[in-house]
Amino acid sequence: MRPDNAGPIIAAARRRHELTRAKAIRAIRELDHAGTPITFAAVAASALVSRSWLYSQTDIRDQIQQLRAATSRSPAAPVPAGQRASDASLLRRLQAAHAEHRQLLEERARLLEERDRLRRQIARALGEQRQAGNQPPF
Image 1: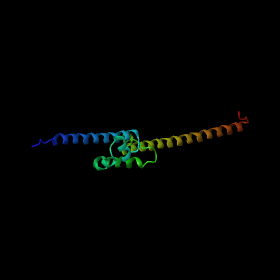
Image 2 (image 1 turned 180 degrees about the horizontal axis):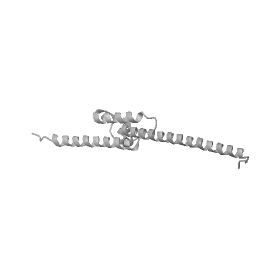
Image 3 (image 1 turned 60 degrees about the vertical axis):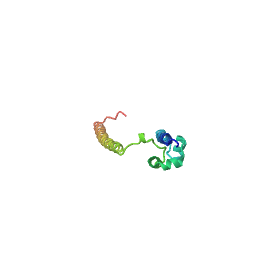
Image 4 (image 1 turned 30 degrees about the vertical axis):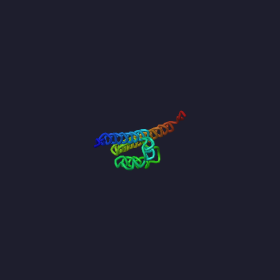
């Protein structure tokens, strides 16, 4: 009777599978961090795995599809996931921009009022000089 050698072979296959998964996940992270478009072909080339293997791994396939969709929406260069602004962050920036805009409008109104007041003062001073018979200095 021959000894059962399947245990070490199965363990080696599991290690190889986990190593391949780790390479694929690392490739996805590196491509995303570099701002490179995430595609099955790019991940397969970077991780040195086949595209068909990537498609067979549901979690990796879903992650690639999600990142591919996120980076393909914008016409500009894709932004790595770690640098993308969250909805809450964008809302805060928009609120800050609105507040700054309101302040600028108020400052503009104040400056326009001051300009009008100074014009009236100059007109009054010139009128008084004319009545007194003096010529303006300019």
